[in-house]
Amino acid sequence: MDIVVLVKQVPDTESLVQIAGDGVSIKKEEIKWVMNPYDELAVEEALRIREAKGGSVTVVSVGPQKAQETIRTALAMGADKGLHVHDPLAEGSDALATAKLLAAAVKGLAFDLIICGQRGVDEDNYQVGAAVAEFLNIPQISLVNKAEVLDGRIRCHRVVEGGTVVVEAPLPALFTTQRGLNEPRYASLPGIMKAKKKPLEVKTVAELGLDPAAVGAAGRKVLIQALRLPPERKAVRMIRAETPAATAAELVRILHTEAKLI
Image (tube, rainbow, N blue to C red; front, side, top):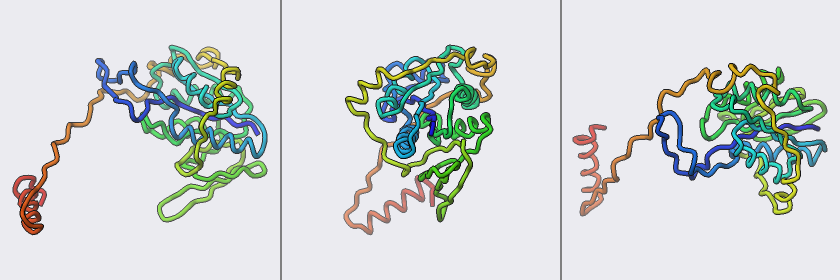
């Protein structure tokens, strides 16, 4: 079984994010970059399916030169090869343009299954996976926390309010990951060394046969008007009184007369 995993490089959630001088982007120089956590689940699931069914795992990513670090991480985990869509014309792509780039890259590959994270933790828009499936005209199942590859189809479990939905789709298909699907493995030292020698192909927009006007900043359908940090919260106010009853009375007074919440 040939599996394609779509991955994205995102800022580490523990990094200090600062707004750049243009007011519509973030400062990227001092940020630590990592593989999107939901994509880690996708890589792990692909490796488990390959171990059970045989085949290959190809990792595909769109991004700047640094994105190759994330592809190499997936290769160190055990993926077989990588494909990097790297082109200045692709920089600034929104979710739709990113999906166009990924779909065009995947079309040139043999695949039975595509797995990707439900969302990137940087922009949280949940759109790329579904759009890739639409461009490729294949079924898509989202937010999967259990997957079973059967004869010519895939069975996926999705948690919904009050229960679990079991969905089947014919292959080839795409599904997106949810917490609980698996526990991603760490890249071993031998895996890291082997990753340096695994094939990693680079494609440009022209090589994918896409119109430059349809991707990158020129092709954006969603424009960022401004970025602002959340307002600073007021310091915690401690209420001190001699008895619990007096403390409660003071709290009620504050909520009523000062905060005007009750």
